[in-house]
Image (cartoon, rainbow, N blue to C red; front, side, top):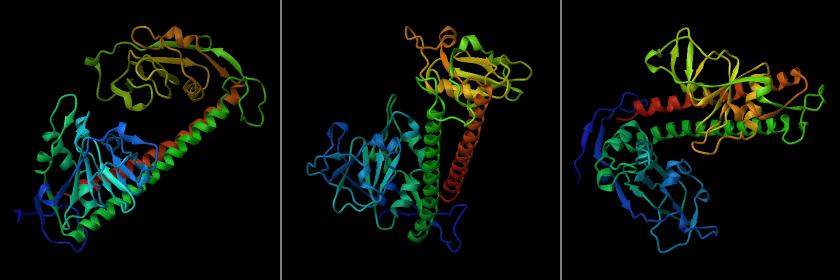
Length: 398
């Protein structure tokens, strides 16, 4: 019989539960199930009734709580030992130390199909005093992640062995309380997934609208506001705007707070690396375009800013929301010799179709603004739910 240690309960508990929690090594709470070095090369398009879990699919989030066996790839059976409902599969290797020991839970009956733990995985079967979804959730807490950071080894690829994993100390209440905790976390996760699906649909809907509101090869879009019917005109960006490249920033003079942000990311407002109090290079409204890395992505800016060296800035009398989306609709040509980059001359020669009426352009720009407001609101809903989930993970576990 393994030694148990009594632990005080966490800060946040359901009403009616007062017992202390017990602490035991993970190896004492599970039975290890065999894993196999099955990689993508083993996959087949045919339905073989045998599926497998690849560590890469755990890291990407393709597999988390597996309720539908059909999301898993098929492989040919080779007398593999399969998993049962309630088994947990842990990825034992990661290119990022933050991904060490990411896990998934088999939550579907496997009577008619076999699920196998594949390459770089450790398969665990919780014992009867451990509710599977509780243990799965525990493995996503900061408590366990911190253990993984300390225990993981390697330079380019980080890994964790079963021997080390089995030493992790798991604190747990009665099976009844484990189920209540799991139920609450599961409800929040389902809500997060629902809101994420809504966000994905909104992004697809925006893309579909813009594909029809902005012309491709012809000079007329497929969908227009009813009062407009003139042909659009193709103009060089350099002829209707002022384009400049960002410069080196004196990081020693950057402030933590100030009126004018220094922008390092063309795609969002999250790329602020510091502030100037009274100095800026670009006056809003303007458009920033990525010059290196993920080249050619544009973002409309409504506040004054200073761009770093890898960003290009466009000042124009045209609607910046319209202009940014028009650039994003097509692939901007860039210099491919040496270090791939988008230069001022290349962007200046880039041609975009514009409506003959600034009123139509503004209507499209306002449509984009309204749609982005809905998307941002949806992002905030997801962020709020993630914060609630993280609060519970920090306060309902010890």
